[in-house]
Length: 420
Image (cartoon, rainbow, N blue to C red; front, top):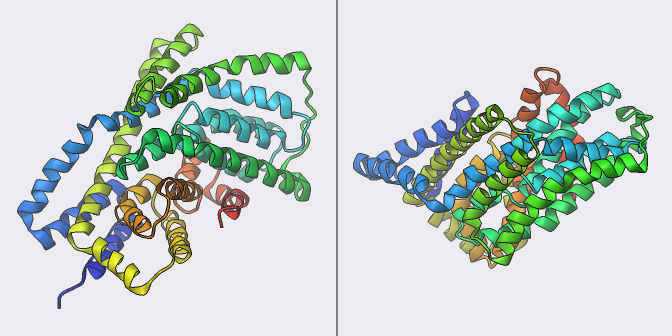
């Protein structure tokens, strides 16, 4: 019996999910299944040729250099204490408001999103800074961890964003245009979180006991004066892209160099810290590229099997409307995000989701922002929300999976409410 492209593609994707369910790293799962699928459909020589050419074409493409550079910029910014400055300034202005530590975390994360394109970096570092303060004032530990994880996702939308750059490269869109398009939705998400938290603490005051801390206006403005580093990085990176001083592919390197210089002049970065930042950026970038390569190989396998063309034909044959298509995509990303990390979901699905959206006449920039929003929700959706595990790892055992899975629910619902 001959299987159709749709059936073969469904089996391939199911194989990836099956491997992930037994604990195989996502990149290894995608590469293994892609190799087996191409071998069975097109032969060993064809499979070998793709495994030789595709990884090289990805790692040698100059456009992709922006990814490790944005990662390095975020790591250097964290090492230089930019997050601590942002959090301190936000906390001093919000100290007298019930739930002020939640608000401070959201505001500081939004600010740090403009200096780091990595949601994982933001979540990890904020855990070490904000979580001890929340514990000190007897905030609910699970909700506190959930707030930090949710706030970290703001880096996915507020430029510069690594996942936005990956999406732009995969869909052959302007990196600068997509980065700017994510600014308003990112700020709107931060505002929605703040409004939601305000309602939560009114109905659940035990989640946020009063801190009884007060600061003078002089102390507030002293803290505010130290966040010039973030403003300078935003002006350097986004201003340079928007004004056309340098290409988006060079923006990451400019931002990383700027973060290093700011840290050096501020005397906040030792040679040891700089070396550790390079190692951390290299480690995170390697993981991203392995996932990237695995997803592209799997996408090519789906293309060879005819899955993408058959899916497109089915949508045209059944006359699926734009609203129905969007509902299917939102549901698909929500479910996949529970089991696969955000970058993997994006890389696996874009090869057939984006062409289908264009065949239906959807605006590519608007649709891209929608996908990023869904990826953002996926990053905090149990049981495999990447930011949740970043917070648990950074807390060094203080936050359990059960606590953060319960604590993230108000934020994941709140994040998706305006979307749906």
